Image (cartoon, rainbow, N blue to C red):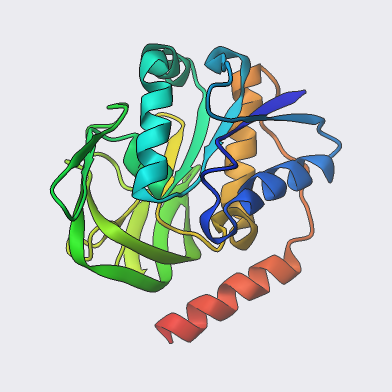
Length: 240
């Protein structure tokens, strides 16, 4: 059985981010893979080494500050779990939280968890719109689609990006990069949510979680005809 932790679903669920957990679970169930999901809220005990996949969604500055304070005492355990292969998907505010800090428009710094050597600063305008990025998963180049809406500009300091922006703004609207990757940690600004729109990414995360558990990462093929047509239609619409 795969164990999934949805961190702070009551605080971090902008733009339907909960759909990422639903997509992960559904694509497992279609293959007969049992999954247990636990929702962890403020003040709840969390043992990171007990989980195979953790999802962190997006939220406002206030919610990020609350979450950072709640996790501060457990950063070492979180980092150890990541070193041991924990699979993490962090979106928008959750992505920013994994870095060193987020500087608000007022100049106040919200200290992050420092799991990634990245930082975020508030921009003078929001970066909004559809996104297409190119990435490589398991040696295969693919295009991911999604929707971004963020005021923060993230700089990843040479860390591997999730992908290169073909359309849209990405991390900061300047360097042509979107998201970040570190071990089995995947970060992105793409809402939509990202996993239902990109089943190949969902399956990649499932395979990594199975490998962490010691199971075979070879997945039974699913009929993704409709999902792939939707993905390709968006790519064609945006790239021509």
